[in-house]
Length: 340
Ligand code: CTP
Ligand code: C5P
Image (tube, rainbow, N blue to C red; front, side, top):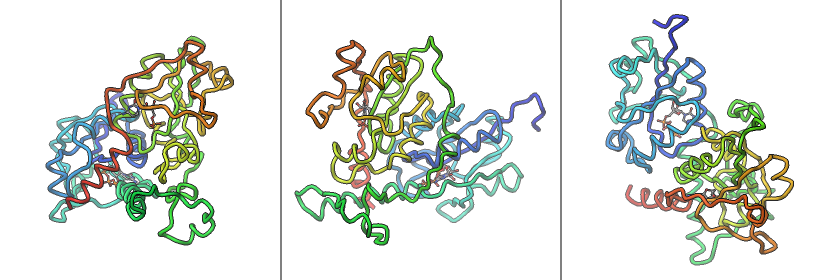
């Protein structure tokens, strides 16, 4: 039993395939119910058995969870049906899960054992976001793309007024997201800290669409160039301009939360300019600007968006050593879907 001087240890488990801010929000709430958060990740085999193969490997899935700032420890190979032995083994007082019923392939509640032992607590599921939802946004995009054959799918910006009523018509301009962002959620996810005068400020910018392991490896490396990492996120129209199709799949607000949930990130600029400006460098006291090895698109004037920090000798190319891209995720999903 927890006493005043004994830290409360909380257990969470799940698939955590295609980790999104809904997962992060459940872990945030779980952590708030105690002091130390242990997260169990199911194996690829177990997930395949109970709900079909995951898109990401166990290694990728646990890496993503480990990087969420409320997570203290990750345990791989957690059983699909949470049992008391597992909780005891990790000295966890109770188990926390979102308020949705999860069942095994045989229809058994995966939390029936911990519920019976009164070692189960529930947090509110984040509405408007799920893996299924993200996958359908991706498939929708590609289906549109396939319909038009070789021709690139163009978002019809002028029809935004009717899109709200037509469920089949989706675009990044109106957003197919059902998630309702609030300032409160941003505050809950934010560190709320400012850099100390002695801090070395690192700035990176990008789309960070469907926050993935490639982004994570990049941010981990970038944050090693200083001790206060600021991530600038481009707006949806800007991302659409350089990514085409109907990217981004996650809108700006969703991307903000995903990036804020990452433990390497201290601050996020919501709607950062495409090109790094002198104003931005000065305002945030940026010491170094980093970019990964992915190609950089020139700005609308045909100029390098990193020209300024380069001229100041404050630009570093960081090798994430990870070739994951948002496009690759979309490919994986399609291959995955074709198999089932
Ligand atoms: N979760 C949540 N809000 C969401 C999605 C997931 O709070 N929108 C929570 C789940 O309730 C669970 C944890 O995240 O406590 C991780 O569980 P996982 O098995 O990965 O979640 P799924 O329900 O499969 O997630 P999704 O619906 O996105 O596939
Ligand atoms: O493509 P996007 O704008 O989301 O990328 C954000 C940053 O992450 C860029 O600096 C990019 O080079 C980097 N990145 C990386 N390795 C990956 C994917 C992205 O270094 N696999």
